[in-house]
Length: 316
Image (tube, rainbow, N blue to C red; front, side, top):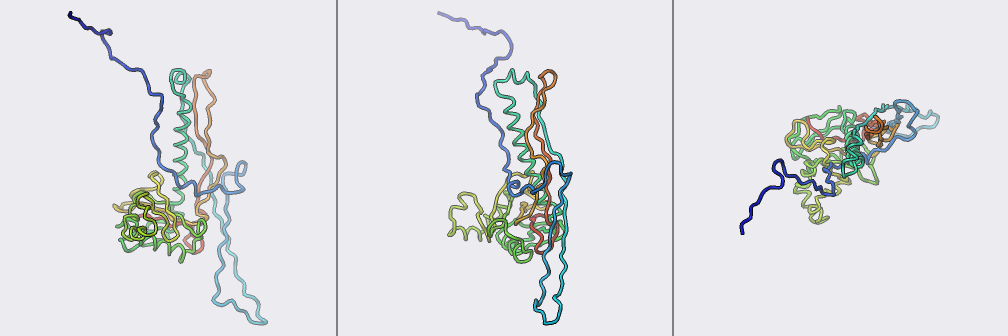
């Protein structure tokens, strides 16, 4: 018996309207800088557009603190300075319609809120990072070769890097922070280093690092962790909008920031938050935005010993 087969739709495109019940979201970079800044206490709404931070410099150490009978006690001058942080408005929004909600099988508002929260997180992290890496952070360090590093104190990179960060450079930075600048530790006895992926790779590919961790922490390489070096705790970020994976005109150096306590302050009038738009056109026009009033700034914008808090690894 012979059969004759024909199409049940004579023309047009055949379509499958079934959708997966699960939404997939694009991955975002890791935000690492915001956890190391805290809102400035005592400042907020109804207190003007800026907060002024008062700084007290250390007294000079006399060569001899002894005094003689009948001689007046020598007098020293107290040096007090200030730095102001002026806040800015921040925000972004996504509009949508009630029609898209009525026709979509997914919750439109939830999708909008999640993507805006991710965006807000990275924008705030980038703003905090910009303060750590700004020209107000006067101390800049540039690896010249695998065995040399140059420090600058004018808020700009002193040279073009010809080598990536390695253990030798980390040791030199630590000694400069502790011995020369007298930077107080961020927590306990530890400084913090936030490094780009390339900068991290330069350190853990250093034979000195591998030899050391072979005996102290053999799982570090397996886990991809730098760990602690010379009481510096390392944190890697892949948020390359906040820190450069190849900085300046260098073809070798990944950017990094080393810092101690009181490095960057955050002035907040309105914590960044999600806000729903008041519906328009009889409820047909909708939207969600994130909005905040804040700013970040370096507390000690000097290169003086006892005052500087940040060493920014960068290049021309």
